[in-house]
Amino acid sequence: MPKSSIQNLAVIGTTIFAGTIDGVYKSDNNGLNWIPANSGISGISIISFATDGADLYAGSEGYGIFVTDDNGITWTQKNNGLGDLYIKEIEINSGGMYVGTSNGTYSSTTSGSVWNLFANNVVLTIATAFVSIGTTVYAADDNSYIYVTNDTGATWTQIGSGLPWSIGVEDLLESAGTLFAATAIGIYTSADFGIT
Image (cartoon, rainbow, N blue to C red; front, side):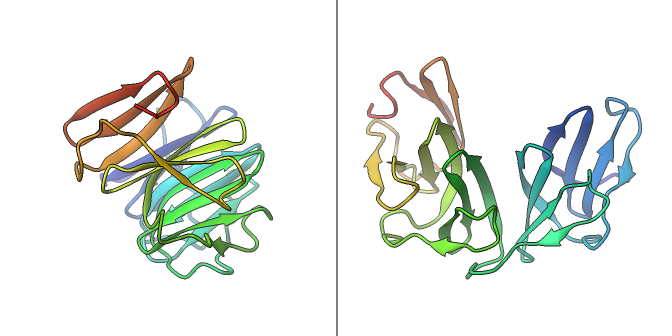
């Protein structure tokens, strides 16, 4: 793998994938050697990954979403309905898929074949991070607001009091009932599912 910015990592089975500014690379020997997995996406900056079984979804800067079901040998675009192709974040759970773009948040219940802009998009505009607990989805935006939905994105409720405004939430994680929010000034935790 050439020296380049590594922007995301994903694992399927024993294969590690790296999203770079020049497409996707993969390793089958625990990172000792890397080979391109770029058929159709060479030169495209990949900034987000999500896995669903043997399927790997890759979010790009300006070219939308690509998916592979053969370990990166071939890739297919999945952009039908997306109004913006800068894919900041992808989340998949049993209720569907969610993507945050630079100009809106979308969901799909068809494995990415069709995307729908959230009806109440004025509430949740630009999602920078997602995390799922069962079918409940938490989303954060770049103003440090956190939202939750229990109906696959039809409605969202703002939560997350206690986070300083406008520090930006870069990532969300759940472990043993505690939510973790990674921000520009540190990590915040919530033991009541994001209420405080």
